[in-house]
Length: 145
Image (cartoon, rainbow, N blue to C red):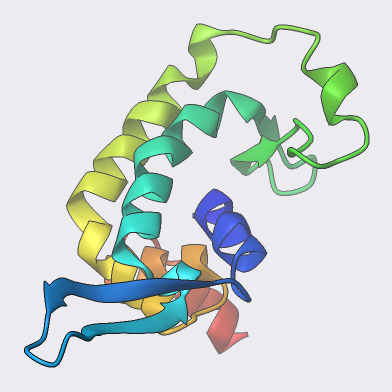
């Protein structure tokens, strides 16, 4: 969800035209501009490709809590080091379970993700994880603290 939130944040200010391609009797079309991040076509394309980026993450263990979590290690497109970084190949089967989990979550919760994005929700991962999909307890615990 962090990957989705990053991409949505990048296009938050951009607009796109939506509406019908039918022509009214007076010769006009009903089209309006909406935020690109709210476009169903944009979100569908984003969700189709987001799991391919799971190989940009690695499993890390917190030295204090011993809790394991996947963290992004690769730079994003547009970062200064990106061109140099992409010269190297970091393929591993280790990320396959993460990619599979990503695809399963997106398939099962696609409507909830669309809904959260349409509400311009921030911290999508936390909100989807605990409030909408009940996938984990971390967000609820953070609020209690």
